[in-house]
Every structure is written in C-alpha cells, then in structure tokens.
Length: 223
Image (cartoon, helix red, strand yellow):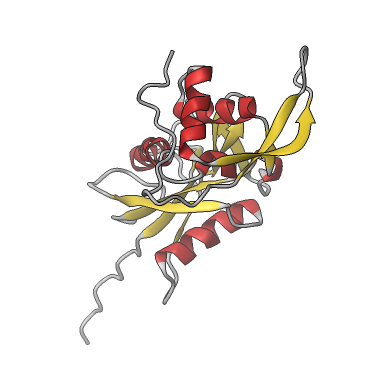
C-alpha cells in the first residue's frame, strides 16, 4: 500500500489590529506558542469553504469579542520568512478598533506600534505594511473618523490625523483642506477644551459633489 504524501499545512490569515493609544497607534498581540517569540499577531489557519475576509473577521473577533469597524486585506506574505506556524504563505489584513471598545480578550495585549515586542520576520513585515496601508488610505477612506466618537472637535480630528500619519499638521491649512474636502458638518453643540471659548462639535457627513470625491490633501499641510 502506497503511503500518502504528508498533508500540506494550510496558509494562515493574520490580522494587524490597530487602535489609538494616547498619541500613537497601538497594535494587538497575543502570547505565542513559539519558543523563539513570546508574542505574535492574531492568526489562524483558514477553514474549509471560508473566504479570506470571513477568516479575517473570525480571527479578529476571537481576539476582540467583536469584529473591527474597518478591515482590509494588505497582501500575501511568504518568501521563506519565519512565521509562528509552519505555513508557507500568510494573507494579512489590517483592522481598526475604536479606543473606547478596544478591550481584548484574555491573552491579548495592546502595544505601541513603534515599540512592540519582537515578532517573527513575516509578521514584522505585516505590521510595517499595515502602517503604510493606513497612511496611504487616509486620503481615500474615512479611517480617522472611524477611530473617533460620532461627534468631535476639529482639534480632535486633527490630532487623530497626526496620530495616524505620525507627523504634525499645520492647523490653518488642515482646516482649509478639510473644508475643501466636504467631509464634516457642524452641529449645534460645543465642548470646552480648556481655556478660551468652547469648541464647536462636528460630525462626519461627506457631501455629494459633481466632481469625484477627494479627501484631505496632506502634501502641503506640514508646518
């Protein structure tokens, strides 16, 4: 009787979950079963008949108890780089989690994106790609608004953009660009932000325009 060839290890789906931690992004890690790495990104093998997106939501929900508010595929990773599993290929996603709901399940911990524990080379590449994806999508998708409460001040919105970009923005230029992008509208409420007059609250409400939608331009907003 001929022996069956060894069953190939299925590829994995890994998720880079990010949230706002103070003035920087945080990434969610879990304790790894690997002897070489103590921490890893949430990951699982795919299940039969499951789409990649469904698998990514399952992985995120296992870690958070609920799905992220935004999730997007960032690519496939392999090239012989080490992974906590023995899978040759991993498909990675990035997901966003509002700070007020960022309460992971036991065994998961938030770490600053720029100062997290060592990861395997493959997962380290995923975190780097996730950061670039978030920054590259800021001008195309309402990523910053998904990390804010439904109403916010313009200062809070600018701080969120600065957190995601990792750069300071010029206040007056940011507000002019935001107005030109038709992304927010004021509401009849104000909030105190320390000394001085209370700041008016806004909400995300993109206007329909005849021209194609254009987000906030960042190439001229740096001080």
